Image (cartoon, rainbow, N blue to C red; front, side, top):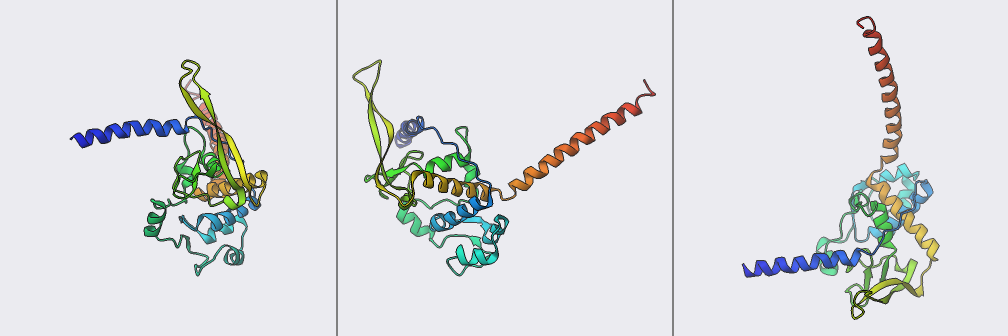
Length: 253
């Protein structure tokens, strides 16, 4: 009984701490990516950098034909194993190994862009901010930390593109209690450059996030297009029904 009370007390203290760590961070709005060129680039980045650890078990490689890719292009550029074009996007990393290396099994990313949506922003906003806010932290097992998800188990897989960064913190004195001081995030400091400029990196991350949003619902464009026609049909049908009803009841009145 005493152990249960202690556990509840620890959780009560831990939850506010987690919320406090994120309360000052505003998610950046993810640029909209709908062109085939952007989505194709996002698919390439996803296969090269995400599928090493994560799976997308609800997506098949041949679905990328919807992005304008041929089967030969998919086979020659996006398949790096003996998988067939019709195979699911799974990783060769075993769950046991992932658990041992990272402490957790990397989640499936099939619908992660929808799962991360919240009142703070869309799932795309979350992923776009998350992938751009890694920083070097030697106290972490992976050597990396993240502003959106503090103490994230995931390492910064895009570090060669973005370069190595650390965070700058500034001391803030409480105006009501000068003796009370806190530290506030004051930006990033570039330690070593990456292979891309900041603008290039942000653009590529936007392509990657755009692809993950598309992957979460590949038929989204078709759904929206059909939705417009359905609304138009219903509007016309409603107008005809209204006039027909008026015609039927004219003599009664």
